[in-house]
Image (cartoon, rainbow, N blue to C red; front, side, top):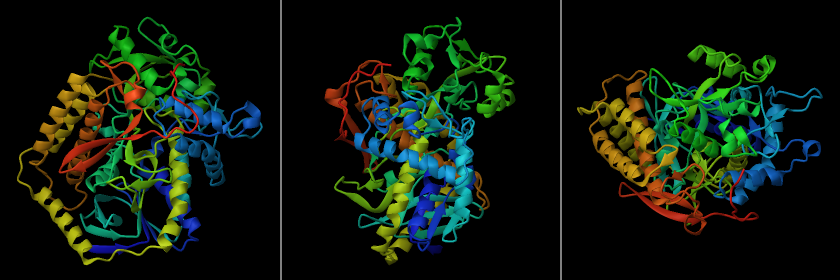
Length: 580
């Protein structure tokens, strides 16, 4: 087994991971050695798919926007479950991040007088979402990647699949990963680790996310005994293209798109009269599902999926070409519909993990017993629950979160590293070798269960029983189904026994991660007997601040989900009725 020593390991290569690498390198004057470990080529990270933009108050003198208003919009959007001290950090730090991307070459859309243009987004009082057409994530990733490859102290390990996080005495010691090209197992030892692996929306079948969004870093932390927070809160994006689930950015509604039912009505007037189509995503998603359940949707002939229309036909053709070019291209290529001529079929799809690894306001991972922090460990971006999104994320705050906490973690790494030493205990190698034997045993297993069958059943269970509206009995059925799937997973069969680019082995490991996280999502949902943000319980239609104004904490104990709760941090704004 190859042993590689670094000062810091960044697991994941999306916006959060690459931002962390840049700021750690700059803060450390390029003297600390950093390994970026990613199961994809770094530029294939799911961050490239972010379409709509990044939020931040850039020109308060021009539109009377304020950081405090951005913070309040975020807290209200979260259905008052967000930690308000963290939200203030987000709002205060976001403008600097947008300007940082400007300096490294992101080609923002601009106004006639040269300012970075900002568009309206759901739940935002004032247009504050900076954008680069509808390919914002791609342009941000390209600029970040160009910066990182120019740093001599940063090595990128493309296509390396991490299988375990190794802790020693409550501190990070290393991680194991195998190279997909040849299945060579490696032990990465370092003083610190930043997990930046994104969310787990692939636990659902109908989702806007890449097939790689399997929550690997969240699952690794969970199995290492570290706590997860608020995993029951899964965001469903209101407008995913039917039948594929391809994301139709919220920017399409920000630029003036309408949602219409099968009677041609703009139905959002009934649900959020002041915001209409630009209400927060949880409200719009519930509205769409309600219209469909009331018989006011359409039915896709081939799949039977029901949907409503996103109507862009009234928008100027030039505006579509300049601000939504990818949406137009995707619609034409995938369903042969030009959105200028016909409305698009859409319905809500799993999109974002509001929960994640439990971290403090500095992005440091909390220890398993909750008594402090796990030494040398951070989680940034979607996989780290800080919590700025609470029960519902406002669109365009995710890129701000990745950027703000990428900088915070990056700036903190050199100082931590200077005071720490690599744990060189001989047991680390033996633990890594035991992990290698576990992977080999899985590969050589003579089981009879096809892992892809388990994945299909898991995703159908989540799609059918843990969707926009949830019921107690259906959640209980989901729990039972996942328990059965877990038991069968112990008997999976890997058909490909080869060492070169064994995607069958990788997929089986990802499916194992999804099973773990689905179990946590469902357990948290069963216990939360209220409706708050993206968690809408049919039997408990009201928010219950008396009993559930608190974060769900999940720790793995004896192979089972153990739940406890933590209070929400409230600094300025007491919970009020959430009306738009």
